[in-house]
Amino acid sequence: MDAATSRPDEAGPFDVCVLLTPRQPGGHEVALFGWLADAVRDCGLRPLIVTASPALVRACTDAGLARWLQPAPPRWPRWALLRALLGGPGARPVLLAPGVLHVDAWLLAAAVLRRGRLWVYVPMAHTAVHMGYRAGRWRDALLAPWLRRVSAWITLDARQMALLRASWRITAPVLALPNQARLAPPTLQPPGPPRARDARLRVAYVGRFEAHQKGLDWLVATLRADPAWARQCHWRFQGRGPAEGMLRALAAALGGEHVEVSAHAPIGQALAACDVLLLCSRFEGLPLVALEASAWGCPVVASRSSGLQDLLPAGALFDFGDAAGLRRALDSLRSEPARQGAVAHAQARMATLCNAASYRTALRQVVQALRGAGEGAGEGAGIAPC
Image (cartoon, rainbow, N blue to C red; front, side, top):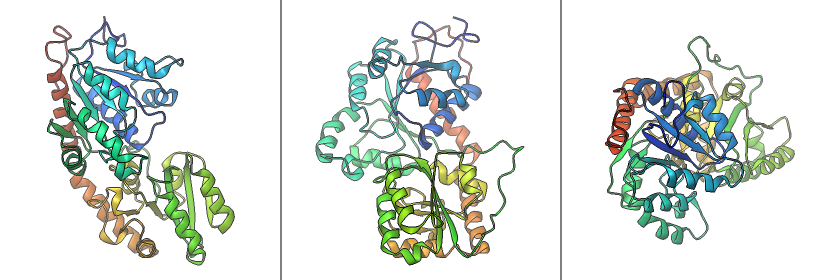
C-alpha cells in the first residue's frame, strides 16, 4: 500500500489502532485529535482511527486526520469497534480513548482478552464513586482488575498520574502529555479586553451542559437562592447538553436580561462578550476551555476540583459547594486592573506548565513508546524517526 496516497487499513501499515468510544467531541477529544495530528505531522505516526460517531468523524476531519480515519458503519456501530479491535494485527498496539474509565468498559475488557498491547488515553482517572455513578463501589470493584492489565497509559498531568496509581493501584507505565491550548492562527488577533455595558460582571460558562460533573445543578441552586446577588451579573451559558432545560428555567426565573442560554458556538464568541469565564465542576481533568480563555486574555474563575490550581491565582479559586467563595472570587474581578492581573498570572503559569518545548518532548516520548510497543509488527513500513 502506498501510504502517501492511501489511508491505512487492516491490511496496510499503521503504528497504532485508535478506538474512539465517546459519542460527542468535548475538550479532551479536541486535545486528543490535536496531539494525534501533531504526531502525524511532526513524528510520522501512522494511526488507524476508528469511531462509531458521526460527530467524531467530523471532528477528526476538522483536525486534519481524515486520511487516517476509518468510520464505523452506522448499523451496529459498537460492534464495528469490536470488529476493528479483534480484526487488526495483534502485534500493533491498540489505543482506547474513552474519556472516562467507566464508559464502554466492555471494550476495554475485550482488548485485554485480545492479549495484544493495550494502551489507554484517559484525561480523567476518577473512580465511579467520586463521579457519582450509581452502584459506584460495584463498578470500581469490577473494573479495577481489568485496568491493572492495561499495558501502558497516557494522561494529562501529574495529578491524573497519581490518581491512576493511588485509586486503581496501576503499576504499568504512565506517560503525561500536557493538554495544550489550541489557539487561533497567528494572523488572527484575539479579542481585546471587553468593556462592560453596565455595572454587572459578565460571566460566561462555555461547554457541555452536564448537571453533575460540571456542577451546573449546584450553580443553578446557588443563583436561585440569592437572586439579588445573581442579578448583579449577566450569566451567559453557551453549549449543549441535558441540563439545558434547567438553565432555561433559571433564565425564566431571573429574567432574560440577566441569564442568556445559547447554542454551541466557537469559544471566541462567548469570550468576546464576557468579562470572566466560570468553571464550577465537581471534577475535571485539565479543561481545555480554561487554557483557551487564558491564552485569549480572558480571566477564569474555577472550583478547586476543576484541576486548575496550578494555573489560576488563589483569589480566582473556590471550593465546590462554597457559595460565598464563588461570590468572593467573582467579585474580586469586577475591575479591569484585577482582570488583567489574573490573566497575566495565568499566562505566565501556562508558559511554564504548557510550553511548546515540554509538549514536543512529551509527544516524542509517547510516539517512541507506541512504536516500541509494536516493534516487529511492521518491518519495511518505512516509518520516519521523530
